[in-house]
Length: 148
Image (cartoon, rainbow, N blue to C red):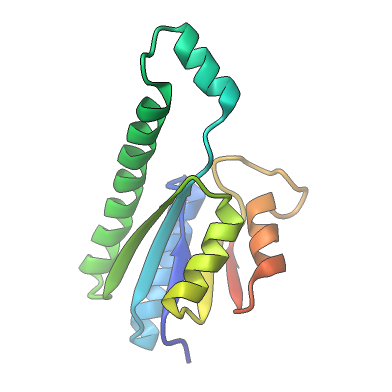
C-alpha cells in the first residue's frame, strides 16, 4: 500500500515512538523511509542574549548546536531502521518552520505517507493535537498518521 514513508521526529520520547511505529509499518509494507528532523529559525532574542553572554559568533554557535542535535536525533532513528532491515534516508532541514519543511520534504522525496507524533518538544500547544501535527495535517496532500 505505501511505497515510501516519511517519518518526522524531533527526538522527543513521543516522537521516538512514532519513529518506531513508522519503521514497523515500513517493514510490513517493504517500503523505504525518509526520516526528517527540522531545526527552526534562530531567534533574534536568543542571539542577542548569547552575544551579551560573550559569544563572538552566536549564529554560528546556534547552527553548530542545531546540526549536532539533528545528527543525534537522525542517527538514533537510522539505527532503528537499520536494525529492522528498513532502507532509510536521513534528512536535516535547517532554518525552517517544521510543518512547512515536513510537507515539503514529503513532496520532494515522493513519500505517500507522513508519520509523526501528536506532540513534540513544545508540548500540548493545542488541546487535543500539537500545533506542528495540526499544521502538517492541514497542509499535507498525502495521508498523515499521527501517533499518540
